[in-house]
Amino acid sequence: MHSYDYAVLLAFFALVLLPAPWLGRFYYKVMEGQRTWLSPVLGPVERGCYRLSGVNADAEQSWKQYTLALLTFNLAGFVLVFAVLLLQGYLPLNPQKLPGQEWSLAFNTAVSFVTNTNWQAYSGEASVSYLSQMIGLTVQNFVSAATGLAVLVALCRGIARRSANTLGNFWVDMTRATLYGLLPLCVLLALFLVWQGVPQTFSDYVQALTLQGTEQTIPLGPAASQIAIKQLGTNGGGFFGVNSAHPFENPTAWSNLFEMASIILIPAALVFTFGHYVKDLRQSRAIIACMLALFLIGGGTALYAEYQANPSLNNPQVAQSAPLEGKENRLGTTASVLWTVTTTAASNGSVNNMHDSLNPISGMVAMVNMMVGEVIFGGVGAGLYGMLLNVLIAVFLAGLMIGRTPEYLGKKLQAREVQLLVATLLVMPVGVLVLGALAASLPGPVASVTNPGAHGFSQVLYAYTSASANNGSAFAGFGANTTFHNLMLGVGMLIGRFGYILPVLALAGSLALKKTAPIGENSFPTHGPLFATLLVVTILLIGGLTFLPALALGPITEHLSLGF
Image 1 (cartoon, rainbow, N blue to C red):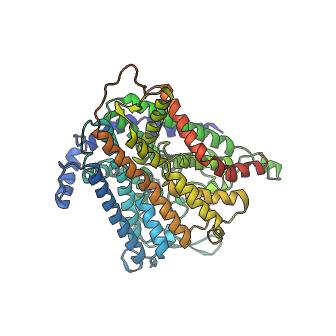
Image 2 (cartoon, rainbow, N blue to C red):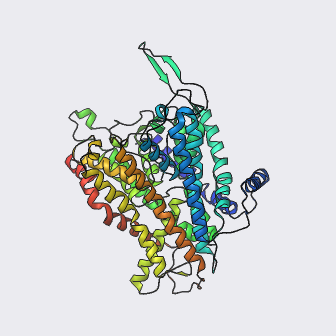
Image 3 (cartoon, helix red, strand yellow):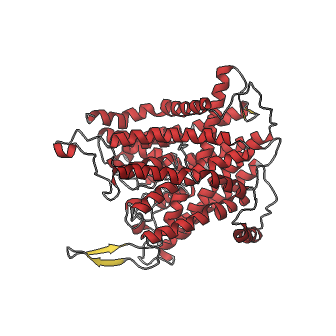
């Protein structure tokens, strides 16, 4: 590594961590309807949205009403995107005359964007029209991220309130999350990306004559606006097929740095939002320390592994250097590995390199980041409510060890809460191990694997892990666009999204009803180094016990077989 690599790492953490406390306080004030510096501009727009939709902003909902509104909204979004993708050949803003998608691919794509996954079994510039990109995919990038933020806020209220029957209003939370929380940042990032060279146009594709004398089609489109929200909303779906490895999505070192930092900017800030809800920023510091520890463990491991020469290469000169196959030379190894770790630590899924070309241990780090539930920062809202589930599990384990009824911030965890927590522990195993086993064992689906042996198994394992974790990145080399995989991966995405959301909202409703007991000297502190360590160990133990056998069949076997 050179001084440039260390500068990239330092700038990345500075861009993420320095604004986080301020932005976290801003989100708390926004979601609770307090006045902010944007209120004079966006306040009338917010009130106009309520009038047009007939929403009473002062009427709060029980957890069941909140859940019903959320499910209704997401179902409507799925139907809209599914219809647009099927019928795009008949719709405007389609200068390339692209036909509608095949039904199973349209189902997979619609589920993918509604669940904030952005798994793409297609190449955007060759398969999706400008209208589909904007009214279908970009809109869902906003509202799927806002849905995650709304669920997190409902859980925060459930923990913070006492003897309450309501958690807020889903429609109000969605409006505020989109209008204040996502749109202003996306406008700023989109303008920055246009300045760096990302296209934002409705013009037709350009036909160019190459130096070799052949014609080349150069795709264009309204890319900057979608790329901004794909990063800030932890979505990840690329406007172009190769995502942020494409020079039109990620043209410069500056665009690479800001896009990368944008992935976890909001998730890091929301940790401090939680601290404002519970009136104890020490809780935020403990959680952010846990997230950073897990991020650094994975990032350090991946960087070390990726800078190791591949011993299977016979050329001594090539074998002594870090392999660059599958990476952009203009970005280099460090920026590629940092992006890989960041995008899998969040439920983002964008890529600036080929994950299929990573050394086995680097690929394993990416998988583990997702297998633990993508709680290492995670998606907008989804990462923190996933981490809070682990916090409650750690509290429960601590209660078992000391022989006391577990409690968190004065709220006792009883049978109902523990049952809901156990239900969330089944989400990833079902999505990854059950669906992945079917894909790896049935003769038809397994034909999508393009590599034999351990690496081929890693391709399947990565795909179903990515879908169930609502990540969306892929190992590549895996032929996902078949009816079986389109449907099964779609099911995995639904399980990974709503298998968490439904228990989380039920848990929020249950906790809101409880009275808060005073925190005394004998209460287990959840803000110090001891608890942060327990939380890290809990996350790694649950993930390790669940997925270590599968990892042993894939990246670990491949690593040993290469002679590292």
